[in-house]
Length: 111
Image (cartoon, rainbow, N blue to C red; front, side, top):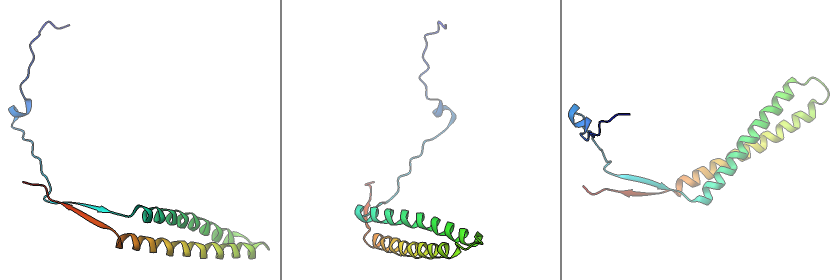
């Protein structure tokens, strides 16, 4: 253990010529959205994502099947495709609606 009790309290940055520069923006903007519209967008986005994966799976299954069950798989693929397109349309609607209802708050810090 060291017996030296001297504490060095000098600033090492000031000796090397380093400077601290803090830059503050001239204006701060915050966008506010309606939370109920945001939750609707999330729900429809999740449904679109899930059904798009199912649609691709049914079409791959249909293309790889060579037996007599091909007709039912084709119907299921078409139905899931229609649901997916519907969910995507609703998602795009809520996305558009959310962008239209977005408000913005601006703050200018004092100099």
